[in-house]
Amino acid sequence: MWKYVKRYLPYAVLAALFMIGEVSMDLVQPGIMSRIVDEGVLGLNNGGTGSLSLIWKLGVWMIGLVLFGGLCGSLNNAFVHISSQNIGNAIRKDCFLRIMRFSFPQLDQFGTGSLITRVTNDITQVQTFVSLFVRGMIRTAMLMFGSMYCMFRLNEDFEFIVVCAFPLIVGCLIFCMVKASPLFVRLQAQLDDINEIMQEDVSGIRVIKACVREIYEKARFGKANDELIRTQLRVLVIFAFMNPVVNALMYLVVTVILLVGSFEVGSGKATPGIVMAAITYTTQLLNGILMLTMLFQNISRGLASWKRLKEILRSEPQLMDGSFDGKTDKRGEIEFRDVSFEYPGTGQGVLDHISFTVHPGETLAIMGPTGCGKTSLVNLIPRFYDVTAGAVYVDGVDVREYRQKALREKISVALQKSELFNTTIRENIAWGKPDAELESIRAAAAAAQADDFINASPEGYHTVVAERGMSLSGGQKQRVSIARAIVKQAEILIFDDSTSALDLKTEADFYTALQSISPGSTKIMVAQRIASVRRADRIIVLENGKIAGCGSHGELLKSCRTYQDIYHSQMGEEDEKHECA
Image 1: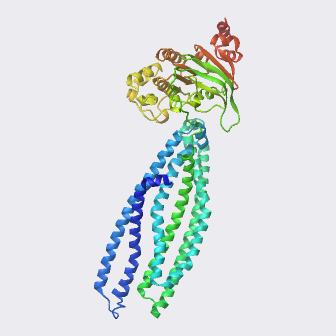
Image 2: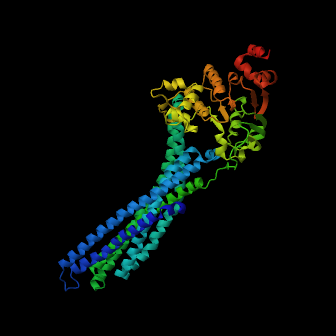
Image 3: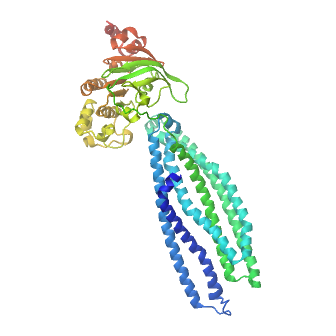
């Protein structure tokens, strides 16, 4: 954490200095009050005659010290907040940047709910930890040891009483912290679960309502929330036990001081003012110890949260950058060379010894049954995952040798599940090319068959899309996503079943427009419909992670049984005979 603290160390130091000033004023006042009682009121040094002038003089001093202490406290609060909030801000930015650099397997490993909890609640806990450490540790330490030192100077007997009770109080604190600390880690993990359920349910609310599963989800959320509350209550019960025990011990100390003080006042060894000051210092010591209990609770939780944040901050991307800058003579060539792939941690193969080459400007379609590995295959081209064996080459260079930014600048992807952002349609289309002119955006939208419905929107291209694109239909979202892929003008265009929500005429019009707007780009199309792929230069048919056939539409109708079955299920036997003829 020092990496972040040192950036704002001057503010933390100033906060510490002002805290020292504030506590010093608190420690000075009981001594002055003792003089007011003994000399100003009782007149013990003046034959039993009080001194009003001394009371006024010392009273003014006390008021001045109180005001100065209040000023120091206010400045301390200001600088504590400046340091803690800036430290939290820096940690949050670094965590977010690190998450943006995570590979897909790392995102799957952490989970969305856990990442949200860590970047929000855990960083808030760390901010609280920093502010309490700067403010609370100094105040607590000075109040405790300062009060004990001042009591020693007043009367050694009173100090002995406090010292005898101190180990019992500290032992109680240590016992409670040992019991409570493991629960804080569990609390944060349970917050992960709650955020995960919330994220799933809010994004899938339409499915929940359509399937009438509100009661089930309420019960699932309630169960997770009940577990969180049970853990929280266990923590609170521990500290509920600790506070009265510490209070009882400290008030017992006050009682003993009063008892001993009464004898010592009678014998002349102490004065009423000294006894009063000793009780005040004991009260300050009690306040310090009570603050220590709260401090340990928050620090323990803050350290547990910091441990979780370190898992993000110390995680290196699993897919490390290469050094190649992407400049080649070729533009859009793709080669799979004996590629096998399985998702990390599953041990189950998805692709098995895949080999093929796509030449620049060629259109390749990929078909096959559900779960045969089509999406997994195209995800290897922009290096969303690394191959398990073999290699994928783009423009003659292994994708693992590329700088990821350089590789992905060559590639544009449109997914079946269209991800849109809560901004204007224009900005959504220009997401991959922020400097795109409106004319280019309109041309891409027209090619994607989106221009008509965009112009019919209330504010045209400046219409704001709702969160996750909920204000658009499935087909509209797909067309905006397709336009986003086209406007980038990449060397390689990948359409991963991105036209599944379009009708056949709209899809056919799109592919016709695509050939004219991006004639030189290499195009990879993943599709389920024969009508979507039949005009491709070549079609690869996948089955169980292997290539079952490769060729043109006509060639596959004659040679590939899997392709024939797909064609027959969609087009009918008569059409198949006609095509083969």
